[in-house]
Structure formats: C-alpha cells, structure tokens
Length: 154
Image (cartoon, rainbow, N blue to C red; front, top):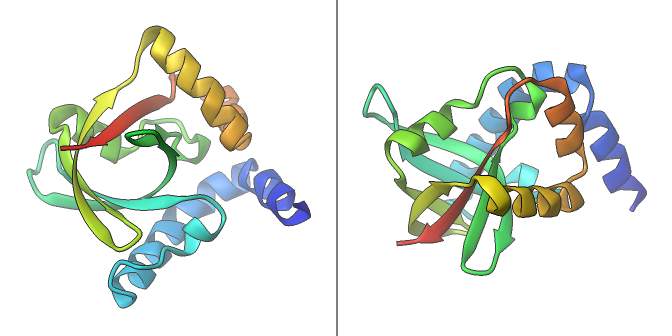
C-alpha cells in the first residue's frame, strides 16, 4: 500500500490543491465519455461517480466527477474542494436542487441528496477520515466546515 500512502501525501499538498481541480475533472470527464460511462481514471484510487446536477443559478445540467464513499443504501459525497477556500459549485447545486443523477460503474441512477448536519455529520466525517485521511488536511486548511451529502436512489 505504499502507492496509496504516496498518493495521499501528494494529494494533501497545496500545490495539488491548486492544480488538481483543473486537471483531474477534465481527464475524468473525457475518459468517462470515451468509455461510455464505464471508467473514471480517479476511481482507480478512490471510488468515483459523475454527478449530474442542476445549476443553482443557471438551471443548466452540470457534470462533476467526484470521489465518493459507498455506504449502505447510497453514497457519501464530500465537498472538500481539494482543501481550497470555497465550497465546490456542485454543493450549491445540490442544496438548490437535491434531485440529481449519478453515473456509477456505467449505470445512470436517479438520486436525491441531503446535506448532513449534527451528530449524523460527525459520525460520517469520522468514517470519511478513515476512508481518505487527506480530508483532515483539507479541513485544517479552510475556515468553512466541509459539506457532506448522503445521496440515495430515488
């Protein structure tokens, strides 16, 4: 598991936070499109989905490749934004329009998202840190509370 530790260390750096948001999603979208929804490059390290949400302001469909944490009955999406200052746009979209769709292992699944809060969020946050420890570095780097969403099939 030396490879995983190396990736976790690199993904915790500020340089990664500056570069990754521009490179990784673009690569994921291209590969996902070319493989007809069957492959996400980033999912070789962490499970991943393509979230199709409705833009909070534009009303346009937005496609966001995201790491996810599969859980019984759905998925957890973590709005870490690679440890950058603001919340990622997809979190604003889900708050405005919780009904969305995910592409999971080649299947298009209608879902509903719910922002987690309180004890439920605290419990899921502990599981997220065990799942991907760099989330702790991301949280330490920002003043905002990283948003967590539970996404379930509609």
